[in-house]
Image 1 (spheres, rainbow, N blue to C red):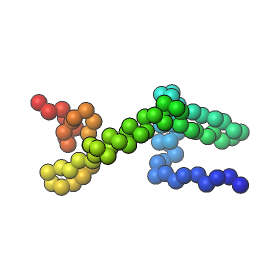
Image 2 (image 1 turned 90 degrees about the vertical axis):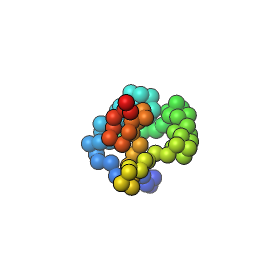
Image 3 (image 1 turned 45 degrees about the vertical axis):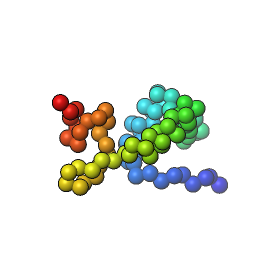
Length: 86
């Protein structure tokens, strides 16, 4: 019997686009078995994940706007509007 597959909220098209990019960046390995393809983490990806987990716990992955709404933190020190500070 096959192992149950993890559920995601990602659409099929998003996965078909993202997985090859992650393979090209050496974050995932691809193994084809007949008509199906299995993906697994590469050693470099296994090293990156604990660091990302630590950074999220220490710095937080969300920010709160002045109105109290919450959302993902913009990258590179950008403000809630997505712009770099002047």
